[in-house]
Image (cartoon, rainbow, N blue to C red; front, side, top):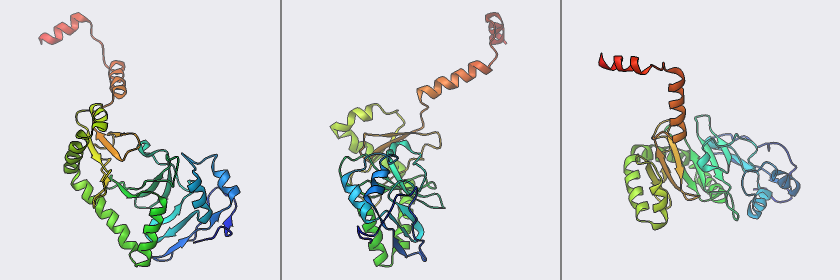
Length: 262
């Protein structure tokens, strides 16, 4: 890990070393105070004092299959799922995985950290913050299990997708027993599948794609409690009716009655 003296000036995107093998890990340099201050203009969410101190030590790293991990929020596109925003995209994988860290906290490091997969469409809770994420990567590297650690996440995603209905039933029952969540539950569509990720478990993920590409996504505040529904929103329904009215032939009452008698 770099020291405070080993820093780099401001740049649109920090340059990271490229890993050599699946278990290779190389940290990036820390940022200067001037570079960290310059991040405030574009940094999504809260750039806390703890985050500033963290960035003085490292701006990111490269590791095995994960590739280039960036803690500044400048190297990768923004996260498309709005239930996670504000957040920074830490890394993108060629197979459709992306690593993100939420940045809504007023204190502490960005987190939770999620691995969002596209196939299956599941978001896995990886760690509480970027510090724990970095520690997990380093521990996996030290044990020569970095590639295996990545495979384990893929296995978790498949398990979440396979058990999505069971997980939804258990979560709905748990949330219904929580007085603080009953109001939120009552506002969800009747077909909503609820996923409560507040407790640690071997399978801790949210199958955001179970309702298909047109599914509606919900979140209870900033809690790791989510819901997915296939119900069409009121605005989309109005848009649909408007399109029907614009493209359909309007019959006179007399013609309509005649057609009905045929």
